[in-house]
Amino acid sequence: MIGVFDYTVILTYLSAISAVLGIVISLYGTGHPYIGAFFLLFCGLCDAFDGKVARKKKNRTDFEKSFGIQIDSLADLISFGVLPAAIGIGLVRASSKYLEMPVLHPEDRDRAILYPILFLVIISFYVLTALIRLAYFNVTEEERSRTEGGVRKTYIGLPVTSSALIFPTVLLIRFVTRVDFTPIYFSVMLVTAFLFISRIRIAKAGMRGILIMIGIGCIEFGIMLYFLLTRGM
Image 1 (tube, helix red, strand yellow):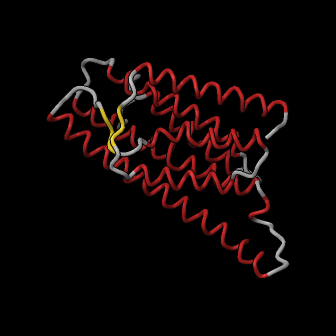
Image 2: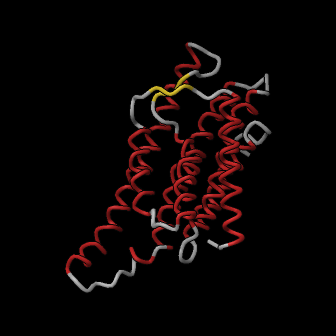
Image 3: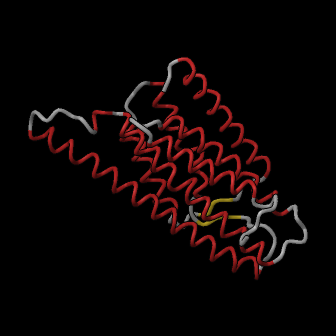
């Protein structure tokens, strides 16, 4: 079989599988965006350690290293590009006001048409910028590996993996407050998309930073699970 199938890529593969499941569930029926967020959090957890696990293998070939870079970015596109977009669509589907709005006045008709189109434009732009961000990272990472070696210290632009905490946080606020955060979700998505392709420099998180982010993700997971069991989503 072609490809790499050892422990160095297992977390990347698990992240991709989790993302696919999250996409399907988010879009199933009337939409289940909150359950999709659980899969997004799991993708973030896998991504936090996949690089460290891969680097544990000391005798990796150049092919295995290049394959690891490429497969990681492809999985990230599904996990942190397409899955948040699917969660957004699920959010729209779950909020019938954007799909089944009674058209009684011309302004209602305009609003019923405008919102879905606007949301789709934002989703398309978000996935495109995530793709551009990951392609840019692949090219610069290969160049950096040849010239510098070691581990990257900073990123240019917001890493797409930040989506694993950004969007569950928005969903959590929406669910706790019972306020319709659908437009806010897409506004955050638009800002995040611009940050993906911006030239801001962000320091790469060390182990302490990773553990803090995992802790935040676990708290979000626990709170959302509590509301899932007590209120239903």
